[in-house]
Image 1 (spheres, helix red, strand yellow):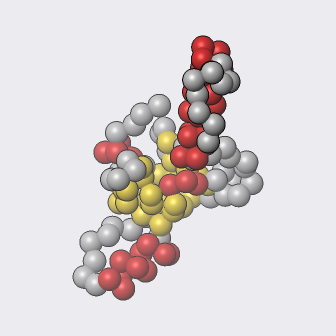
Image 2: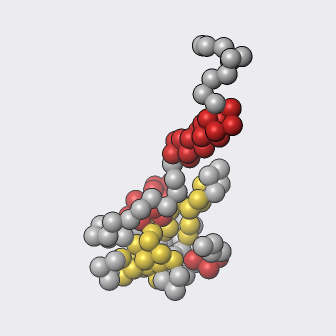
Length: 118
């Protein structure tokens, strides 16, 4: 399910044990991978790197802890087992290789008389 980033701003954040954690002020986004890295409960408009570091360490939540984001954002407090949302690149490569090898076995065979041994 896709959600607009603008919808997340101002949402309340709760843990699975019903603890209120704050509201979403800022999001740190990894543009290369296209994923949200961190949610902050304080604005990141700061004058120094030290203030920004303090906000990131004390007033932020890693997005990998998010279980659901609908009317509120629900994060894992450690008492709920959660599956990985994004498959690792290695797993995706293995699936691709498995699919290719199955196709190769089905249509080409394991070895042909023209293939070279390496």
